[in-house]
Amino acid sequence: MRTAYSVETVRAAERSLMARLPEGALMQRAAAGLAAACAQVLGRVYGSRIVLLVGSGDNGGDALYAGARLARRGAGVTAVLLSPARTHPEGLAALCRAGGTVVPADGTGPATAAEERIRSADLVIDGIVGIGGRGGLRPDAARLAALAERSRAAVVAVDLPSGVEADSGEVRGAAVRADATVTFGTHKPALLVDPARDHAGSVRLVDIGLDLPEEADLEALQHADVAALLPTPAAESDKYRRGVVGIAAGSARYPGAAVLAVAGALRGGAGAVRYVGPAGSAVIARFPETLVSDRGPAKAGRVQAWVVGPGAGDDASAVAEVLEADVPVLVDADGLRLADRDAVRGRGAPTLMTPHAGEAAALLGVSRDEVEGARLAAVRELAARFGATVLLKGSTTLVADPGGGPVRVNPTGTPWLATAGSGDVLSGLAGSLLAAGLSARDAGSAAAYLHGLAGRYAADGAPAGAHDVANALPEAWRDVRAERAVAGRGRTFQG
View (tube, rainbow, N blue to C red):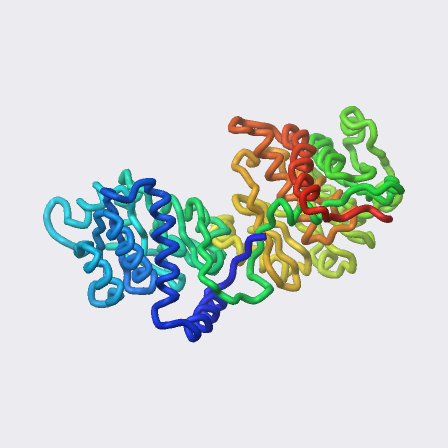
């Protein structure tokens, strides 16, 4: 599992470690890791041309010391000083001793010396702003960062791309777009959450010996973590032990939403699926194993969890009935609009809400741009406001519990999942995991992970529909469960 910690937590850990180390030792550790990563990006250090964009903080010092190491290996290294009076003095002296050169960030003429060096560079190291940066880059830095992005040089960010906000993942102005980011000690939330994540490129974590708390601010599950969550039938299992999920979805206008939600549930491991709604004939035609009822959710029969809302149109009655059930409930799509907020907040059993950014914006009373620009804040606010676990779909899918704790970040998504009906498949899949006994947080996290993998497999670099994603779910399960075979651990259905 990858974890990310807040700026405050990281700084406290750094202070504690620095008190036990010789002065400057921690920065040297970071610089050594940075230099090694840059050497890998370059392939050949000797004879390469490297430009350091150096600000006034410790990130600038890291860049200068790394530049000195690379200069000693035969690279031509130039430091562009954005705040000459506040440049890290020891780092600058180390670079000059190693044969590096220094140019100011400003200048006159058709092209400044800094601009000429950037245009001819093989590598640009972004050491402008550290983890405490707020509000985007200042004009001089923004100009050079934009030039580096347009150049042929690879751009490597120190700790995180300058101009993004470390704790929130927000980008409130001009920011560096890196090809790679070398981060120290732990991931920062901005490296896992869009829109900042999109600026980071590939991320390499350098261990500098920080002693961090057990509970992180963010978690990103990996194959082994998901494998440990997924249920496996035991010899004595029956459909009820495996979990029966109810699907109240679809309408005369949107029968396909019901079909896709049922597809996600059946391929999500449910022992049985009970469907309630007006699209029963379409569901049976595609999935004859589905148990179809026209008596409404309250009389549909025994279920261990409900999914309500995909393609429901304007029928609020099914949503109200499902919310009264004393089993876990997933609310999606039209269900989010139709659900009584007090009924959601007053439920005793777990509730999982799965909005996309537009639906989240409507629930919060803000614009879609505000949600997409501050995804982490939005998912936490929704969870707190509704007293429910919230899975916020999008470029980085996030899962937050109402009681706080680490927010889960899904790492497997793909832009190919931005297709009609994909969310319906996810709802059915997550509902089946709820019925199997997973918590709302685990069900949402594992479902998002499998759904993302299935999207990758279904697309394989080309367009794919939601039905293709559903059909690829068994492959995603097999891929993840291969980790279980190696680890020798996991859940089983014991009833």
